[in-house]
Amino acid sequence: MNEIYREMEDSMKKAVEYLKKELSRIQIGRPNPAILEGVKVDYYGQKVPIRQIAGINVHPQESALIVQPWDPSAISSVENAIRAANLGLNPIREGKVLKVPIPKPSEERRKELLKLAKQLAEETRIHIRNARREAIEKVREMEKAKEITEDDRFRAEKEIQKITDKYIEQVNEILQKKEKEILEE
Image 1 (cartoon, one colour):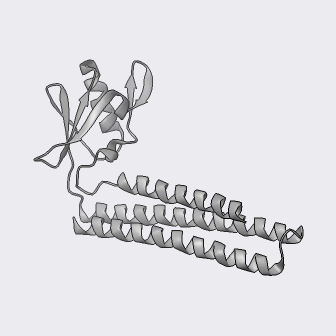
Image 2 (cartoon, one colour; image 1 turned 90 degrees about the vertical axis):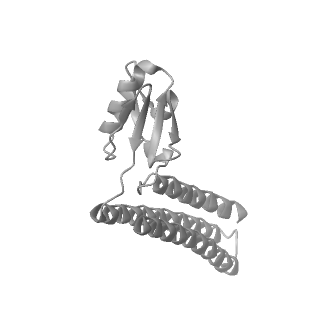
């Protein structure tokens, strides 16, 4: 039984971590290096993640990111990759660095971001429910194989539901926090 719970919980934890990562990439007018996480730069004929060829920091006074390629000759490639990433960002070249202003989102953009956040949360809930379903199927197979009693199955299903509720609640709290963040800015 414990093995089934552990597998299910691992799957649920990964889903929640994925949700956190994806929500951190939703830009809300606040500079966050995670915004550029998915940007791939064409560097000597290969597409590489921006973090592999540049340092990304938050500008201390302005609502902007500072992107500094380690190879100064790559600045044009990095600039083009940021523009091409469809993030609504326009980097400004300042010597050997790029300043990437983070604009405040319009009301329409906030609604889009909210919709995206809700969609990501629902996908995570679906993943959690699928993990629950798989665990319940395993428990029922154990009962059919006479490895456990009917009472054991009921107890196991109750425990599985308790674990599921815990992770669904985490998803709801994470979404609630992100919604507040999107609407407050």
